[in-house]
Length: 156
Ligand SMILES: [Zn+2]
Image 1 (cartoon, rainbow, N blue to C red):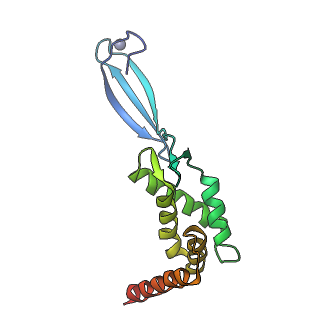
Image 2 (image 1 turned 30 degrees about the vertical axis):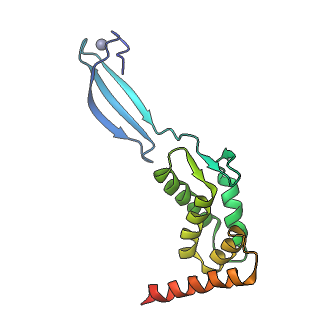
Image 3 (image 1 turned 180 degrees about the vertical axis):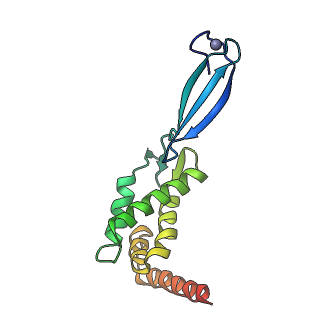
């Protein structure tokens, strides 16, 4: 960070303090050349995330789209809007940890299902039925059976 007084490039950090929500860090610096002090602010920048669709085309990662899909699956279920919002946050954060810039759309759906499963089984099955595009009753019931078996083994 260039010193605003003498333009020297070297400075020493005297103090770092994060804002309450941890989104901003304030650093008090001292220029090693002229000894004057200045403050810098550091903020997280989210790089744009793209979704790779089945036909290999890319589009912007869209939180609204995910929220709509989850809301539809949660219709008439005891899930609050806040819970849905939290779920969208969790999914986005998990994806950003594992994928830097591009994520296959299939992966997004899998992540949603993974978290939805713990939140509400009915919403999970609904979401899965739309998302996995079950074309016949058998693949749908297979998924439900797999889910129930897993629930049983979780309970053991
Ligand atoms: Zn300086």
